[in-house]
Length: 133
Image (cartoon, rainbow, N blue to C red):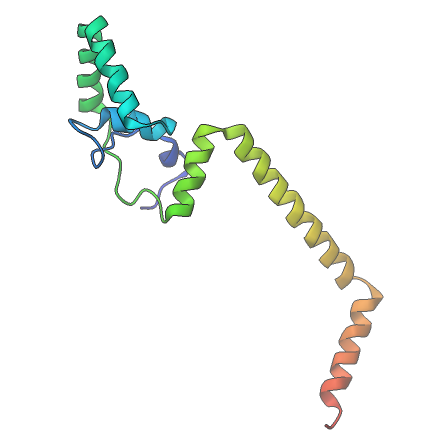
């Protein structure tokens, strides 16, 4: 599925893991909680606030889209988006660290390529290739 950045952060009904309409499973999936805990909380809420809870559940079941089966390319991508939803600040910090590390490597490579040492190494390799064995 080709999607922009936002589709991975959307709230979906998880019909594959759901018992009725997948609303509780969708909430659990979005927040990385256990689905059974969410179901128990919804049942307790239904006893205390019957009309509100049932109304919200029906509304969510009718208007929330079902989670696409091919939302993630692989487990690694799914793990990344789950971590991002759970802790965006930590995920952003980790991404910044990886970019800084890549930038340092790139700057070292750039310094080597623009140095006299690079030119000397190239000339030595070229001589090595041209020399008979």
